[in-house]
Image 1: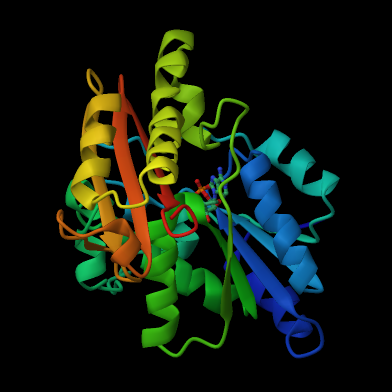
Image 2 (image 1 turned 30 degrees about the vertical axis):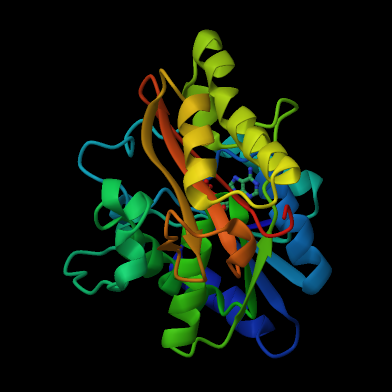
Amino acid sequence: MLVLDTIRKAQEVLGQLKGKETIALVPTMGCLHEGHLELVRLAQKHSQKVVVSIFVNPLQFGANEDFDKYPRTLESDVEKLKSVGVQYLFYPNVHDLYPDGFSNQVQVGELGNRLCGRFRPGHFNGVATVCLKLFEICRADLAVFGEKDFQQLQVIRNLVRDFNLPLSILSCPTIRENDGLAMSSRNRYLSQKERELAGVVPKTLRRLRDELGTYPSATVYDLLATARKSLSGIEVQYAEITEGANLKTAAEEALISDLTSPRFFLAVKIGNTRLIDNMSLKELR
Ligand code: AMP
């Protein structure tokens, strides 16, 4: 695996491949787990060369968030990437991506203010900005994102559409632990006690799935009431059901069966750790 640790090196090496072989990019912040590796496998199915980027992007962290303590585990990340046959690791530093004088950012529309955006102002502008840079530097023909961060996936799809970026976006279903908790680099913040408590997140998703199986005529209101009950005692940032690609809040009285692409979204805090999850309600009806 070749490590490209500067923009210049990445542009040189990947620029020579461009047009001869297809390049897939898997953007990550490192501290890699099986979820990231599944993205890599999907990228490998669709492309001859795979570039994984590891960059903890300061632009997408708020002032009181965990940028400084975000886990950085380069050595074991490199081993994992080698074990699945990744050809290139792009590992730039902050100053290289954001040199003095850096001043332009992507402004994400309304979608960026919904769900996580309400609690993380500016977050999706930071995500879109770094992804635009990564796509361009790596000359990617396609990029792979996880449905675990579904709002981010939609922000990126809109970015590609609105700026006519010459790449395709693929998505990978959420990879979960045995009890159903979505894998996340942030899970390692959880103490043993908190990890047990975090089981309430997949349990809530299961309850909604069961309810829809039993009562196909359930409304948005019914499912949210079930979610709230399941989450009692937990700090909930939001529990919402959305409709459509732009993740608009669905009307409470709507029947799930009448919606075209209903999706349930959840963000909770367990201790100081913020956990998010989501699932489509479409296939469950
Ligand atoms: P991160 O390193 O957390 O920024 O994530 C990098 C990419 O991996 C994003 O596209 C995430 O959506 C994706 N990802 C993270 N966790 C999972 C998971 N459990 N299953 C699938 N994809 C994931």
